[in-house]
Amino acid sequence: MLDHLKDKNRAWAAGKVAADPGFFERLEAQQAPEYLWIGCSDSRVPANEICGLDPGEMFVHRNVGNLAPPQDANYLSVLQFAVDVLKVKHVIVVGHYGCGGVRAAVDGERRGLVDHWLHPIREVHHEHLHELEAIEGERARLDRLCELNVVRQVRNVASDLFVQDAWARGQTISVHGWVYSLANGLVTDLDVTMSEPADLERLD
Ligand code: CO
Image 1 (cartoon, helix red, strand yellow):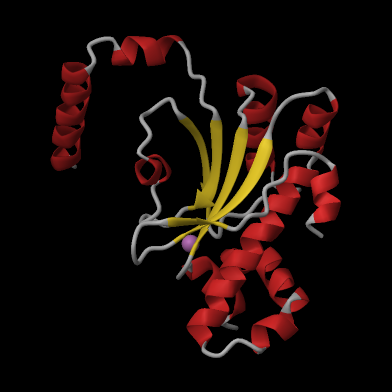
Image 2 (image 1 turned 135 degrees about the vertical axis):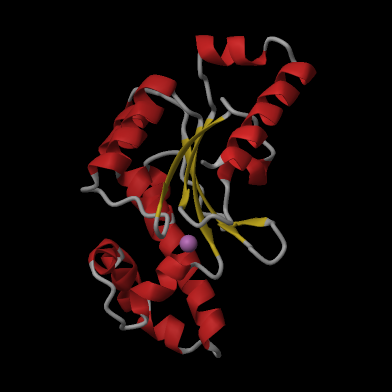
């Protein structure tokens, strides 16, 4: 079963060792990534690959719609480990244009549990209704909602107590908001980076 995946795995591991014989020994001894990536589960947005990073270089959390909900134990566990133990320097929230999660949040159809999961996106949509309704074309409107959702999640991360406490004890950590384009493989920085408590007010 799945022999093609196992074959590719063996070839990949052999390639890594051929290029750098100590690669896996070093990784086994320690992981020390500088980045936490919070992105969408979408198969077209693979975190490491997009940034050209090797295993060990990025701590990754992915869910439908790249959400950072302050009551989600999975996300909070990842965030705390990244901030308190790994001491990452950067948290990057990465949305993507054409996100099915963002579309599903506002298309009015019923799918089940995921509709509850996507509720925070409906809230963002509601809060920015005037801006969004003024945008010509559904696709452009949804793309803007993808951006607004990222900004909200950046705010969630930066206002989280794990990050606030890290800043209070002098730890250097920045929270960034990016959007990835499926069309050309490029990320756009939304310029909402938060590196200290005052940034939460400045970018209100
Ligand atoms: Co998506």
